[in-house]
Length: 316
Picture 1 (cartoon, one colour):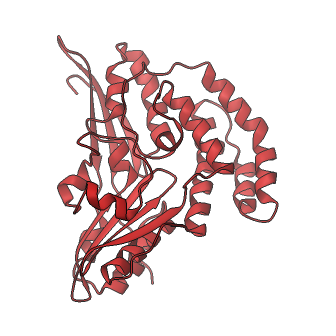
Picture 2: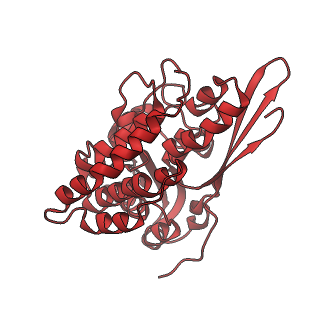
């Protein structure tokens, strides 16, 4: 089965200033959701179709869809590591570390090494090969980052822990579209993903910390690729998947054996919240030139699953 291409959305970061109020930062997150096209479709067909619509994290999206449907049918799944989701996530980390970050820092991308590392990862002896092969290029990456500024510390940033589906039910009994567009944890925007899994309570250097977290997860995944699902009520199920970028949640409500309601909350909704830490980090950087320099590195550290752009303008 093939699926027609669709626009997965974008992140637009607008940097500006307001007279008498200092720096301002606005985030526009457009996530045209594929799930609206799935409503009314036979559930099994919808679940097979959904991962075909995503060019990024297709294995994670597919796993979440299948597990949420199982839970809606009364067959929840206990937390377990999905090998395909884990491999996909580790390969995503390789892409960022060997291609995107070097290019962002003015270094050549490691295309040949990336291709070979992605091929070997998960094979017998492959993880050891990858660790040895990446040692030197990752040292160069860390050295380059050490010479660049970080944003001023932001106190008390909520870091979303890995959550099993059953644990999320007490936090969010049902997922609705408004919440999905701007999710919160204990009433506040929170970070998810490598930074949340590894940075600890003090997040003083988020850019460097994001690099170190991805390096760590290549050899010690620490919950990466973890999946689970839970039944909310008869005909309603929720799944969680810990992806390269963070917590992914799917919720399916059936009408008969067709999709009646489908909500997806991806890590990008958490990490690019309009009131989240990214805004605080940038608004805490008073110099327009320093803010413009930091912005693309912070966006890359948080790693949206959609295209992104940065605009300059007054009164953002």
